[in-house]
Amino acid sequence: SYVLTQPPSVSVAPGQTARITCGGNNIGSKSVHWYQQKPGQAPVLVVYDDSDRPSGIPERFSGSNSGNTATLTISRVEAGDEADYYCQVWDSSSDLPFGGGTKLTVL
Amino acid sequence: QLQLQESGSGLVKPSQTLSLTCAVSGGSISSGGYSWSWIRQPPGKGLEWIGYIYHSGSTYYNPSLKSRVTISVDRSKNQFSLKLSSVTAADTAVYYCASSPPEYWYFDLWGRGTLVTVSS
Picture (cartoon, each protein chain N blue to C red):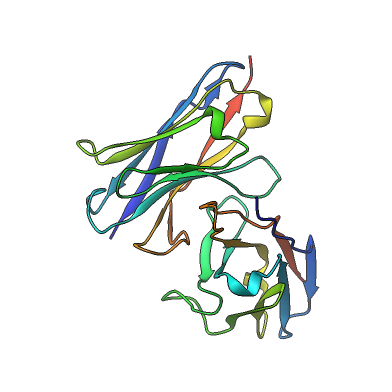
């Protein structure tokens, strides 16, 4: 099955830019989706199809995908962005794997 | 607007079968070409996709769980269900139901999740 690799943690100061990566073999050929999960809550979709945002998600959240790495970028980070973030793809075997998750800490 | 709500037993004994239901409200489970998934999260760990049922009725399961999983739809009750057999403590997790819009493979709607503990 297809494996997605994320860094366990990323730290950033308020107002700075956070970048969370998701690695996979030729992931640039797949559509990558990103979820935010706060403690005790269900995940929320923040970016889909590499770089599109659902309604209600701030423009500060953006995504890119090329080669073997997809990236979720959060600009002007706020304290409320502190959460776990997961990437996910659709694999050709019809699987829907998730990355291991990245804990974003706002310093 | 669609909403999802999980229900089922919160405590299951080892070797028994875990059974959960996801009620769909605000729309018909049969309309719109949606796909319906189950996802779980062990305490303190990441998300694991369990499987989904396509609007056509076809099912796809995580290969690591395939031998123990059954996902089905009850259109008369507007709900879909998960059965996971021969459970062990490793199956203790928060179980979420989620939906994917037609022809897309992301989860745009989630239930609130339900904790299932496997213990004697």
